[in-house]
Image (cartoon, rainbow, N blue to C red):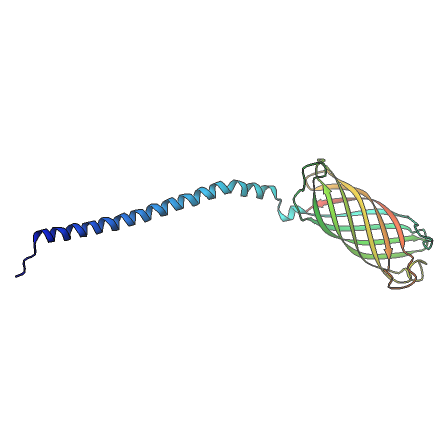
Length: 231
């Protein structure tokens, strides 16, 4: 028989009890830290949610940023060089699509948004002889947004133009040309979706020196049109 001192046994019992209390303390501490961490995460999410929601409300959906429309105008000849003898008259039709690529920029009267787009060009020329042109031009637009329903803008673009000018228009010796243009105008919102459009452009037609002659053709294009936002 082995006799164990009672004081040693009591010490061992106290040690095991202390170990259990320490383990329970670690578990409780871990649970407390997890709960505090979860509450902190929820608090951060709660604080961050209003700005995120506001940003989503401030940025329109991708469909609301897109606009389709068409402008129609009469061509008024502008002769700037001695070699530009033709009076280019006719009608020009430009259906287009564009999309806003920025939220409004600035805080003053010039506050506005940037848009990129593409439009087709259909030219029906009546003077100096019957001719046509068909082309496509990417474009860049800056629209002022500080005037309510009235939205002034400046725009410009350029691209290839296929014509039957060779042998008909003395300034141009090729059927393949380029159309480069710039102008200004304004839209007026009739409803949340539909708007009127009016403005004027200066346009230049040239073959870029790829053929001869290449005197170039210039014309002003006062235009009117209609536009619709996509929903």
